[in-house]
Image 1 (spheres, rainbow, N blue to C red):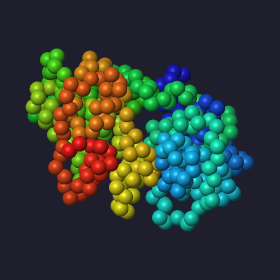
Image 2 (image 1 turned 90 degrees about the vertical axis):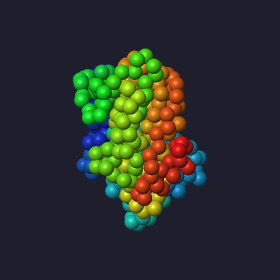
Image 3 (image 1 turned 45 degrees about the horizontal axis):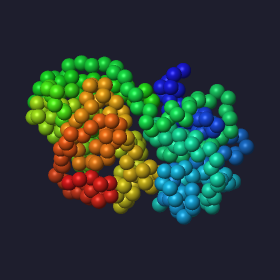
Image 4 (image 1 turned 135 degrees about the vertical axis):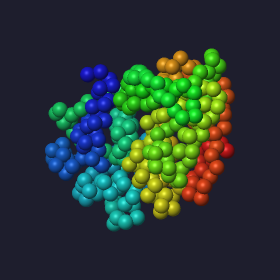
Length: 347
């Protein structure tokens, strides 16, 4: 089984609550593991709970050394009260204000830190809450290497390319690229011609609520439409539509973040309470797609310095940053202000 298939199999397994072996550890996801599966893989009820540093901080463990670094996994000792339902209640911040107090929580030393980091990365790629049971060896568990889950494993392959007429735009083609590390399919719209000059490029992260349903909670839909207009007006360029819903945390977790925002948290604090970083995206896949299209220098349409930095780190030169600000509405004004204040977005 090649690396891509191993990662795809591991993602499928963790999504459906089945065990996955990563190096020397075997994990099952708290969110998806059934009681029957837990009894099968952990008959003695001794499995420990692995959570992210961000979630540990939300659970008031930030004073502990292992929780002080947000990206560092935290291992929780197994207690008699900590069963499948209790673990789900701990992992899901939507229950923080309604559940009875749980505990005590006792972090313990984490020996296989590299494997633990890879396991949490796998959960995030699967769109799950970053909370896993560390169980003993399980015969038949899906297996994936730590290196296969590294953040910079970003090769892509062109899957299909075709003409795509779009109203108001010059001749456009659509190309689908499949990522070698996780099997996700990203799309490039190649618009018009850019005559050897650095093309105008927009990296647009998938947003079902904004792009499709016209949600007013974010500015994604207007950004997408305006980007297409600007690229067409420039005579050509590329829009990459990247499978990075919710700044990389996935659709279900984005909706969980929305529910936390309804309770008064801002977009950054909501992501962190879920156990994620403010922004879980990286742009290595975007850079790989641009290189596959023969592009190594771009005019980048963005207000997010992290996009420019991510492309430059991956070897794509930024000839110019072109501002891309949308006017606020009453529903997203605080959201846009938070992105500027906490995430470094430019006006």
